[in-house]
Image (cartoon, rainbow, N blue to C red):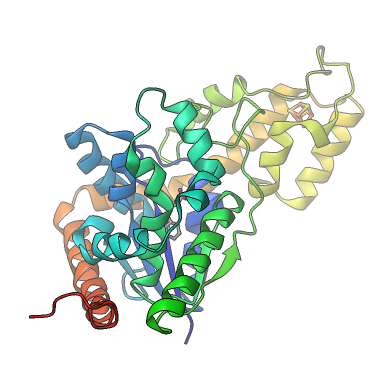
Length: 326
Ligand code: TRP
Ligand code: SF4
């Protein structure tokens, strides 16, 4: 059977981009594959978060993932740092990775610009740890967004190099690209993300969602209500595809292009759709929040299952690479 591994960073807010781009895909894939899902707190350390905040974000993300439908009876959900073999294998992989390869990573270039004054080595070797996350479970498939394809290419390259030097041990993982197109932020300029503060949080109250949407950028040519709009360049329209029925969307499209529907109404319909999807998630999350032991138990159980696999792999790596085995 195919085995998937995917990771998500605990960054402190769970927004529609995470839900549509990643987690809904996780929920679907847990029925089709053996699935390992990791909350990658080691990766989050590259941004040097406050300790209490990082722990709180890790817990909150576990709640969010479970509330969204990841089922611990189907998938292994665990925290990356709870399985130290990730870091151990990452070191071995670092010794197989060329500086030139890491220098080409566009995410490194972007992030080191964003995080001026903190271009730490962890940011640079980030994709090597990601490769280890995948290989330690000998995963065959990795569901990710478009922006991670380059990291997956590097993962495959590192695995090929390992095979060449030490003999084949890891499958070359295939990418499963998330079918949800990039979820744009409310600014209409870039992908929805916490750092750009252009997001709608899954756990936001309906009033807050409505308020944020009121400020969302639309077709800039539609200044007054009787100006016809262009849905294809409108950010709000791009969100409708996830939350609004086809029938209703046809109505909106016509209303926009013929200027018979205003942006305020259009945004109201979108808000209804978003609330319909997020409300049950919000309710399940509240139930989980009132039972913190439940979440901890799930993560501990996940740690146990993940560790068993990771230890097996690391034993083989030790044997192949000549590391001391006692
Ligand atoms: N780098 C990924 C991201 O930012 C997160 C991640 C870490 C990951 N390890 C992974 C994704 C392993 C897939 C597989 O989205
Ligand atoms: Fe965008 Fe809707 Fe306004 Fe048209 S009516 S410009 S789709 S917000």
